[in-house]
Length: 135
Image 1 (cartoon, rainbow, N blue to C red):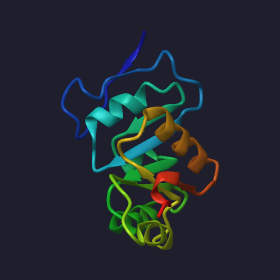
Image 2: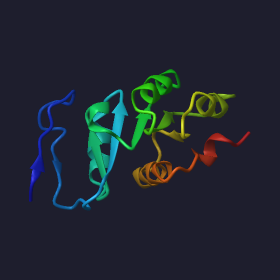
Image 3: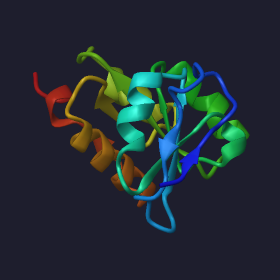
Image 4: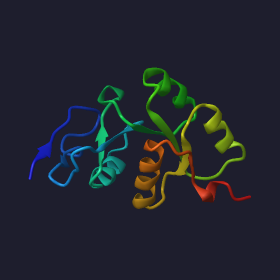
């Protein structure tokens, strides 16, 4: 098995990802701000690769603030940005989409659902977690 070591904001050893299980073309994902536990969980998906910065040319970026969307899109207009949230707030889905985000998803949902949302966003879909649209 091969291990990729990346220089970046993650503590030494936390961002080492096994790459023997990856497909030839994996989706690059940026976490802004860095989230080492989530990076490890996403990195275990066979088709996702977490990158340390926008210079890694991510297909999808996950952000925690709507205000971060514009900056990421200015840096890489082709990157799809998903906003992570812990709960529904009135007007948040509309604000995220108006800022240019590809969607809004729950931060603490199952990793499989998060990975699926990343894949869907990379295909060009708008992704809004159904739990965030209920009254």
